Length: 336
Ligand code: KG4
Ligand code: ZN
Image (cartoon, rainbow, N blue to C red):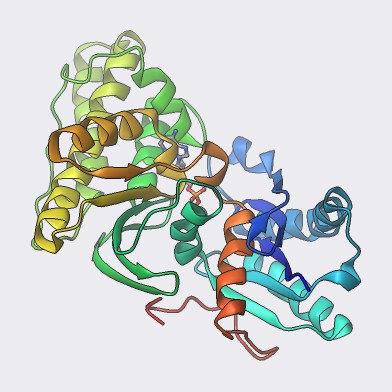
């Protein structure tokens, strides 16, 4: 008999559902909430309301395109956290109510662990152990992945996430939200060495990205005093130099981690892993250091439910299901 898992993601501004059959992803349905664009960032209350509106149509589409009925599902995996509380509640409440009605287990999934397990949606799949640089709007982590459900965070940001640095600096450039993809596009036409921004250097394998945002803000303010059109005239070079600095900071610690752990299987995951500069840099470093690298397909970099359904599948196989009493709070560590 086959194992069918329905995965639900609602941690931020994407309402998503996917069906996983015997470890294979059948579909990956996403409703992106465009309402936040005019506010220049995700508005939590609006996100919750949009999830509420989208969740049933998105799940219906996932079931219909998979050619299954809801009664055929063996378990429902949902994003437990981290994420926006009101947004998480929509997904978790739906998952729990449906599971109760169907008499199937729920599987609470850690969102960051799911980003890592996005590497097991399709081939080529990394061999254990591997290091995963998990970079998103809320997190920046170097994760040592020993097995599907055994992961250890060996380095992480002490303040802002790198995605946040992309988004906030993009806002200062006036290029709109979400800033990461916009900076990426502009950077492709710019000179990454034109401007130099200070890099924070904190101990061990940890990161700090709050300083660059402030330095970037003061730099723009001072240049604009001399030339009011400074940003417009240098937009591509500013984006390229900013992106170069952020990537350089990410790789300094990643290289240190690879050396320290003696691991040559290196993966990237999370929304920022969609960045073309980061992907190209990883390929270049792979040649230099003899790494075998794993870069997810674009659709599996940013938030999606395929990664939740896949994580749910591995948890289900390991007998790790949840209860209706699980709260939608982030687990501090996802070593299980
Ligand atoms: O993983 P994700 O979709 O959501 C979170 O879990 O936070 O990541 C969203 C982040 C945002 O900061 C967004 O600007 C960034 O990923 N991002 C990018 C790119 N695409 C998305 N950053 C840089 N370049 C991109 N191409
Ligand atoms: Zn995410």
